Picture 1 (cartoon, rainbow, N blue to C red):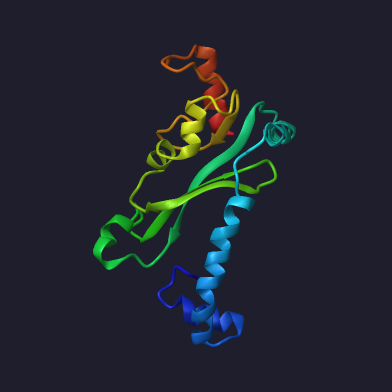
Picture 2: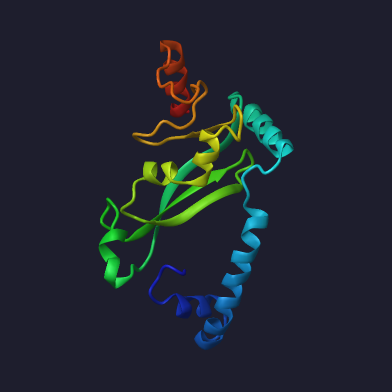
Length: 180
């Protein structure tokens, strides 16, 4: 609804209020969402939550150490006129490219929604704080599973920093993990 050029009129019609009333309440609603987001969307801030998530994914898929499932999606919008070209995605529509990570219950635990549609999924992952935390070992043997083209997500057999080679067996497991 916020992505349409007439979102206030649409929202007012759906909510059964006038557009001016909708316009007056919208900033308060958005401020509340922004204020509450850190409390409700947080990526495994305790060891207990990490363990619970790993057990949940293992029960569902048989994959050990999984802390989340990751993917990106395009959310259509009306782009700013001055930077319209940045928001044009590969399907020639305007969007932002949103990366989300969910836990074993399908609850969003992390979201990155700041890049225009022309930005590739792998760029978003490489530049997000979750990636930094995986790189510095904050999540121990934890993994993310996802299906990205041209991006190796932390797989079942990750190497220590500075090592980039995998045995044939590790490569086989990595391919199968990303396929499922």
